[in-house]
Image (tube, rainbow, N blue to C red; front, top):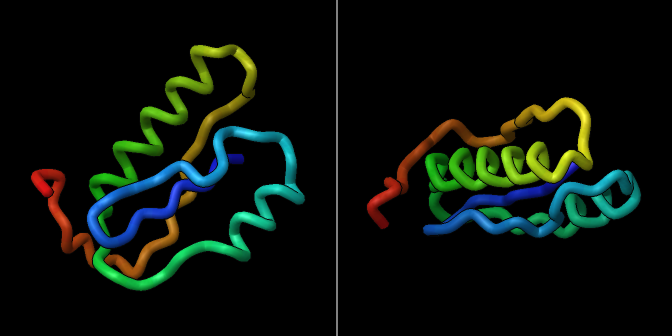
Length: 78
């Protein structure tokens, strides 16, 4: 599990790939909300994070679970 919130103009990895459910839960409880939705930034960061995890050989199957308000209102140009 990795946690990558995207808001305002960026996407940040607040939990790199980890097997710790407790750590993931803690990060989710502290998840920042509000601001714009740079959906493209979030997807790009998730892709890079997943590919890096696969290349490390330290993970099994990689997938993205996206939670969003559905308004991709910040472009990659910003």
